Amino acid sequence: MTTIQLGNFRIAYDDLGKGQVILLIHGYPLNRHMWAPQLSELSKSARVLTIDLRGHGESEMVEGTNTMEAMADDCANLLEKLDITQPVILCGLSMGGYISLAFYRKYPQKVSGLVLTATRAAADSQAAKDNRDQAMRTVKESGTTPIAKAMLPRLLSPVSLVNRHQLVTDLEQMMLSISDQTYIRDLSGLKERPDSTGLLSTISQPVLIIHGENDQIIPIDEAMGMHGLLPDSEFIALPDAGHLPNLEQPELFNKAVLRFLSRFHE
Ligand code: MLT
Image (cartoon, rainbow, N blue to C red; front, side, top):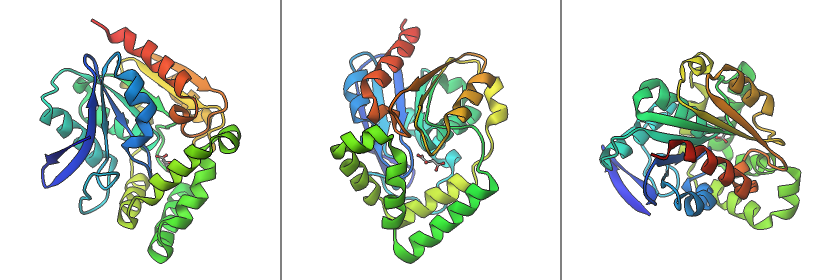
């Protein structure tokens, strides 16, 4: 792990391997350690970067809402600081996918491909916005534990919940390590993110969509809908995987990403 100064705050990241750059962007309310099985495996064939988004993991917090655009800027600034000038592949999970789309909206020329995992292009519905408000009230009144405890069983498939005790423990620890303030900043950024559906038809770069068949947080139909709108996309549904297919089916996930990466080898 290394830290680097971006403006007035420090962020933590990992940088492993050589060649085509793939930047892995984690979901809410997690951190870069959710990509452990990818960092070790994909770095045999590519240069893998993982970032702790502002306020998550070992990165410092920044005042104000964690908008998808601000976090996309953090990713762009990290690449710039590392002198990475060639276009990169962005692999974002859930909130990381929203950030990838925000990055593409602003810096399309910096993107060579996208891996959209367990994510959607649509903005929050009114009901989802109301839920975000409720969650922010809960954090202010009772802290993050009730949110993390309620979310944890919804993150995983029934098979993972029964068989993957260590994963459940690690996830709980990751979710509880994030400050109340960061939950609130994320929730308000998630709530106000714009709809990216119209952007999809403009993405000429290759896109790989990976979704768990048992995702309870973002139904698989939404991912299929994105596949229908993207000019050059491949869609992979992983069995016995919920909202975290990279952790629940790491081998299948890595195989799919490695095959996608082979399209970019010079
Ligand atoms: C995530 O996993 O990043 C979140 O579930 C995204 C969301 O709540 O929309």
